[in-house]
Image (cartoon, rainbow, N blue to C red; front, top):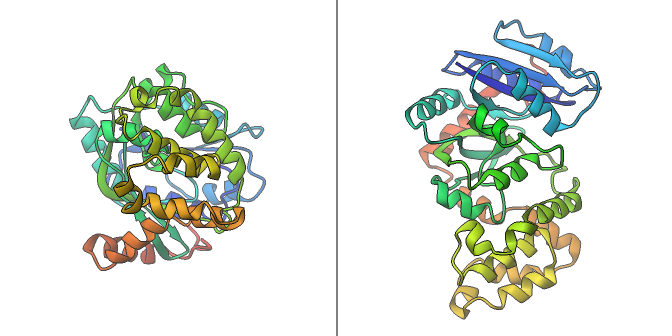
Length: 325
């Protein structure tokens, strides 16, 4: 048995699709714990329209934020294995079955996630093929979360034993950084989650996000070689990308110029370096477009994997989610 934990807040437009994707899983032995964080739209009505005994709805009496809502969900959940879900995303039908089987087979893995695809409406924009092994995931944490939060399955006791979620912004990344040396990560090399890309994503709280991520990594960048297992020769490159994504364009250029000439000219460092000369607005748009992921997706557009994702998305219904349960 597992608990699927889904916090919601003003997800009325999309929540029915998210719920339906969980109820239609090939693995059905779960409780579906939905905690609404005091929505002001009709999210709760959309949830209550489903008649399924696996759903357990809890409504907060005030808005407490995502981190606090998740901690409440962990305390309220009935089972040790927790599968996270967000109220505007879509899980592919075999997600829970494959993750449950893996977690049962590999007891030393504490946090399991997967590959995922970004979508908007009925269109797949690009897919993210995260690395799979713990040490690689840990190295990638030096820059960003290699663990997609709404696609994760983890052992509840491990998360609670290490203090649960913080009450701050980007609570998942802070959690993974805090526990990276105490647990084992793994990612299944399959696309099991569709992550919704909102049109406002580029501009929404981007400066707040960057300042927050930068502050989270500050103590780990005193000695990133030891903290993340990167090579000494790669330290300046990692510092450059940290500045590129979350800090100063000028500082990023300075670190990038310290890279070996062959690497600087014949890797993605060079276009990244050139983009730092753009105006602030154009630079942010360029950076957030994730061009390399879009190109990779287009190059593999006709692969069986990508055709499967597109076909599934077309079958799920309208992005406006006006379909009744």
